[in-house]
Length: 553
Image (tube, rainbow, N blue to C red; front, side, top):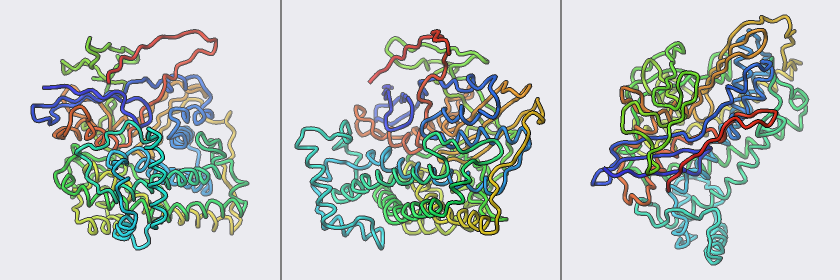
């Protein structure tokens, strides 16, 4: 066996390390995924006022700030049994759903696409033929003109003539695993650049109700403070206008581009490349009328799509068997002399990430889980989006459980959200129309129960997010977060069960072990979000500890 080490894995949030063992045919036989930096935000939360939970938890991540902010506040509201006004819930949902769209588009184009697009090959493309290909996947392809593609080629050529590719440098260009034609590369690359504008605009939409983004300020225990923006017709129109533009990009660029990618890599999809253990988890949510949610809750085991069980939060357990923890203490284990992780024994610890399990099973969460479970639970609103995609691309439902399939699930979900987010806006407008302008439940904090506990479960862009809080004497005494990447990037347990990242890598063949592009494709398909710093400080400036990270190219 030969060991390949990738450290750090880039185009993600945080610091992730992958070690894979390949046989003589370059096929991955074993994988070890390691979160390399410690997140101590739960420790910082202790002894703080519960009303500050969102402001602190929102700093867990610079990408998912709104998700953690909302989950923290909701866990406190659950602890005190505080009910939100309808408008407060709707505005929170609007911010969250806009974040879904931002996150999915940014992930596909700016974090994952270069695993499939050979930038240098785009220079060989025929602009006229590129325009024709655009019409193959969309009736009205986005920014699809001869002149547009000429301009993209000229911009790229300037990078090359300058002797550098700028943001496109250090890629595995020319790798055998790239399959797209020169024209397909140029088409996708042009939308990569257009998606930069999309990212800016959708962020403005989130900031309309959040005050700013990242790290919104408008979510408070009991509701929302952005009532002035809700009542301002211009601000509402701005939000609607941005979301209409977002839907246009998703329908005419993002979804067709993923269809293109799916058709180009159909042989890998049918071969099941990137398939994990088939255990899927969703907690559902986002109610848009009296009877219907955007997503359904449920659990699937072993790709048995016909049997979707009801989600039961009491079946969740978080394990530290292979993580660098010993009870409540940190026990970082050094690396081997050659810089590799200590994985010789089945009980070696090799990651800061814990191993949450549901009913004793490792689970996968995220867009794929949401789409599969919602579809199988009979969600009649998402069904047409799924059926259209798999019919046009000549797939079966199980084909989505692959590397490319995870991208397909994100695109399907984005098209679905961008369609139904306007139902949430309409509910808000109707409430205002009939003089319902409440956004916050008034309460007297001093009169609330001093000792209590609460929790919150949400579907967020990368999957299931849960926050748990324990409060004594109206101070936080214990706080716990299980984020989507905690589920997906979990290290093995003592029985050898792999987390979704590791399981999805088994059986992948590397065309060139010195350029492990295939490993990056699998891991990027989950959209990893690892904590990006050590969140332990001392306000007096005292040094609490020193950490040395060994890296290997």
